[in-house]
Amino acid sequence: METGMEIAGRFRYYFQHPWSRLIVAYLVTFFNFLIFAEDPVSHSQTEAHMIVVGNCFSFIVNKYPGGGWNVLKVLMWLMAIITGLFAGKFIFHQQLFGRFLRLKMFREDHGSWMTMFFSTILFLFIFSHIYNLCLLMAGNMGMSNCHGRRRE
Image (cartoon, rainbow, N blue to C red; front, side, top):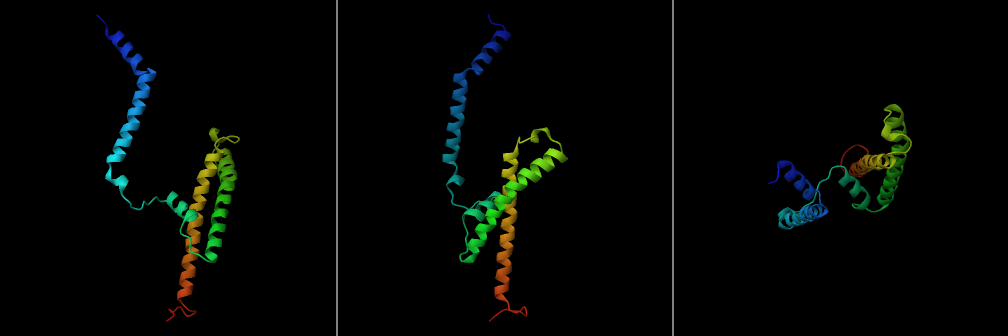
């Protein structure tokens, strides 16, 4: 007759066995694909609205208006990436997290790539709004004359 301690030890042995871990991992993967295959939302063709990352992706990859605005757009997102990298490394990582907040995880160069990545996304978001503001101002200027009335 087995005691409760032996049953618990045997269960723990089989629970931590590599084969049971592999089976659980494969089952999770299989059930994820099964849910994806049966989910009607995954087959839909709707547009997703991702607040910051979607705006940055759209700023870099698509929606180019043509003409000289393309050059301005490319220059803006190149400046945003460079500004984000430098601001992430020198302002956020070294000054804010390293010296001002004195966080140990940001001593020397630890965590600098993560900080630079997130600050680049932040600056892409900011520069995309500046670019959209330029487009909006140019559109309003093209529609009105010097007296503020619309052209006919």
